[in-house]
Image 1 (tube, rainbow, N blue to C red):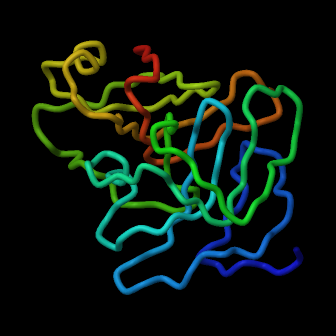
Image 2 (cartoon, helix red, strand yellow):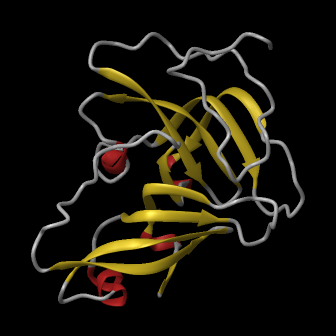
Length: 200
């Protein structure tokens, strides 16, 4: 239990969760040519998860679960899990790995401070960033969504066929608790069909 995992597989606790429970020996297999280990955070109705996943080098995390090639089950290495629904300060559970059904994912993003290039051009004409709040599970995501100048958030969710919505400059909060500080990330993906959206 005292052995530290390698830097590519270790997953630090996010700022709005309790302190970590210590490190475990990761069981991540050696990476094949063209693969990378990426630290991610996953939100479900039952819990908040974070750890590392193995992806192809060419795949960016913001596209990972948005395509037909998305896995049915996510294998999360060196996993940490914090149950939702508690207003008390609790330590996350640590485990060597976990298997989570992709259909249960409400939202996800890279684990800070990991970053990727943004998936849009800020100078793109005829589009604007609209400030919204997305409510999914027990979490609130405040950020900006990129929309056509002809759309507002209501029109967008009525007509889109996307499974996940990209939110930029996001602040994630857990409204049921006062001890968890907000977590800020440059990009988060929120599943549209399981969230409620409000204009700001």
